[in-house]
Length: 181
Image: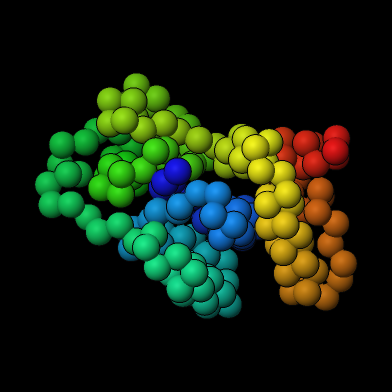
């Protein structure tokens, strides 16, 4: 399954780390464009130079970890597309050019289902998507989640519990599912 990741799911950090850790388990193939990565960098830069520097390192790591994720723009594709927010057309164009199955975004209103269906795509929110993947591959997702938790603990210098970490990252359905197991 190929999934175009919108910048809004690449920044914040924990959500991105969970998505990419699950992708690293081979459970989906992430796709992005240079423009999407640029939006991620600009979003981080609003929090200052240190946050932008961290984003640049994370972007380099993502590129190295997923060398086939980059989708090059197709000439003329964006010109024929329409979305409520024209600033999101490049995300749709990336998904189409990358032959994605869906766009993973928190921005439902700007990616109408009918428009996406006409292009053979769906829209997925990260929490629902990750819950669904977990329901089919619990061990692999839990392995990915443990890596994210361990990294967060190391970076913060204090032990982090997984479920609160997921809840703060707006992955509440996934956190709740883990609580029930």
